[in-house]
Every structure is written in structure tokens, then in C-alpha cells.
Length: 189
Image (cartoon, rainbow, N blue to C red):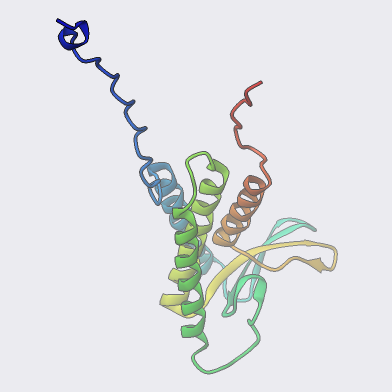
């Protein structure tokens, strides 16, 4: 009898299990939803208070020589761009542009990884601000701006909570893009 005929066949080790497939990162996480909702609520509440307490085109001095709360209407885009321009269906065009921006931001957010925290939080602020201003445009045809920062005769554009959230969110996204605030895995030696 040949020993090769009686030996049991060699058992090959099973191939390792493939790593679990990385599922898509959720569009927004609960904390991001909370940030979006908070921005919208605070934005709408502050605009309501301004409309109820400060007559249109009036102001209240908050910090002399630096900050007033004013009640102005912005029918244009951010920083008063197109505010003075008048053209047919301007309100519908502004709503359409804002809606397209929201869609683009949402699509961009879908591709972010969980390690891109600053970008995710930044986009949550941007979305909250964009929704806050879109509500105004859809309901009234304009956005209420009220924060008036100035130094002597130099005035910054009047803005609101939504605009501030959008600006801060943009800074967070830029910081994440250049790598500030990201946790990098240690490199093997």
C-alpha cells in the first residue's frame, strides 16, 4: 500500500473573510440635524423679533460706534448682491438659485467621510443658514437682515443669523480642506 493513497488530503486554510464593506456615510447625522434645526429656529426667531420690535429701515444702537440692530430687507443674494437690481420674476429666480445651492451642498455632503468632521459640521451650518434664508425668500420674497457692524463711516453689509452660520460653515469647510482639525492616522515606520 502506498502511503500517499492512505493519507487524508491536506486541508487548506480558509481564505480570510473580506473586510466589511464600508457603507455610505449618512447624509446627516443626528448632531448635524440638530445643528441645522437650531440654526433655522434661531434665525427665524431673531428675524421675527426684529420685525416685531424695530420698524423697517430703523435701527437700535447696541454697541456705540460698532454694532446696531437694523431692520432691512434684502431681495438679492448674500451681502446685498443684486439687492438693487430689479428684473421679472426676481423672487422666483432667487428661490431657484437657493434651492440649487441646497441640492449641490447636499450632494457634496454625501461624499464626505466620517473623518471629515469640520466639513460635515460646516456643511450643517451652511445648510441651516441656507434653509433659514430660503424660508424668508419663499414666504416673503426677501430676507430680513439686521446685524449692522461698522467702524466710523465704514459699514459691513447687514446680515442675519443664517448668513453668519453660512460664513462660519464655509470657514470650517475650508479649514478641513487644508487639513486643519483632521486626525491623521500614524504612519508606519
